[in-house]
Image (tube, rainbow, N blue to C red):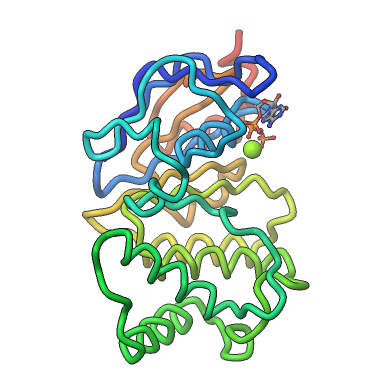
Length: 247
Ligand SMILES: Nc1ncnc2c1ncn2[C@@H]1O[C@H](COP(=O)(O)OP(=O)(O)OP(=O)(O)O)[C@@H](O)[C@H]1O
Ligand SMILES: [Mg+2]
């Protein structure tokens, strides 16, 4: 589904951050990326999603066999790549539900589909919100206005489930995540996962990986993936930190 070959990227002013990333994600897989602060984890997710602050200087990003490096962020989203925190904006007067309805229909339109019939949309909103324990009054609140950390998280996972992307990239850098928020993410990911989609989960929390079973755990340090293993690697990192890998 996603294949990254020798990816190098820098920020606009010239500092190289990604220094030759290789990563392959197949349908049905969950990949976790861990690594020290400043390693380039969020940069990698932004570059996959196509954020314009970064310039790819070498390598390729293939999504379903197609090079997407020239695609705008919306085009990538329409092809089925979802990045959490993609819509952190506050939009007074636009409710949680209306925002996601518009986003979903925009994606359908880009893929040559009609708007989702209102009845079907309502059923979908109901199904996904119930699954995530989202109450009705939350759905009619203004997007992100005064949302707590946990509410933002819940809304993000709700957006993911509604849009039903092929590849979901979740960047769980927020050190403010409490146990409840971790559970929201975990329950959401587990409900979302199927044989046809994939998840790239960036996290500092080994604990999160107790709830979400990753197929692969990668360590990203100084712009490169320096080690790949299975779930036991996360446990080892929890115990020993990163130093033993960096020497
Ligand atoms: N837009 C930007 N402008 C300037 N520097 C940036 C920018 N984006 C990233 N960097 C720098 O690139 C490096 C990697 O940042 P990145 O956010 O990708 O790290 P990270 O692995 O996600 O770290 P953390 O675990 O703290 O979230 C850091 O030194 C950061 O300051
Ligand atoms: Mg980060």
